[in-house]
Length: 243
Image (cartoon, rainbow, N blue to C red; front, side):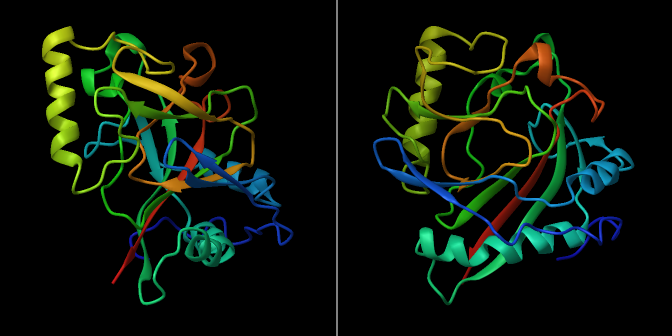
């Protein structure tokens, strides 16, 4: 791991008595891992986030600000779960885990400021062994994460083989029906079906394949704020297993 934040959270301690919950979602029964009570020293991590340098992400459509996660936290989380990911997702043993992006994230964009693509579910990667690790840090109540099915194609996951078909069908739908309403996508509509909610709970870690169509289930009343004491603070670790 390189280019990560300082070791401010070097005392980060993971819960050694993890109780992973494995659920299977959608028509393809994709595995999703849910681990509650991940951090034993969550206040230390929140204190680190309070001093982090949050900036707008110029390289993605993320509707908010981000800051680099502390290296010890990332290492501790990955050390705790990487074998589980290999097992559950049948990752070939010759592939090696490579962190891709590691951020604190806060949603700050009001709905009237959203771009059209920010009003649609998205996927992180078409790679089969690319995963998102999402750690909910703020106290409740906040919106969780929704998994969506693309209604014109029936696709829940976007692979290299289906990406062109998905984009073509999505463009045709938007051309026929117009741009999506200028709001966060939090429910079923004529374009996408919400088939699974991954509920928000403080100190919960959710692990899912990055090729799943998903969206934060943003509640504008509780989730949009630049302050970590008021907003929906998450830690986002994106990893890939490369040959």
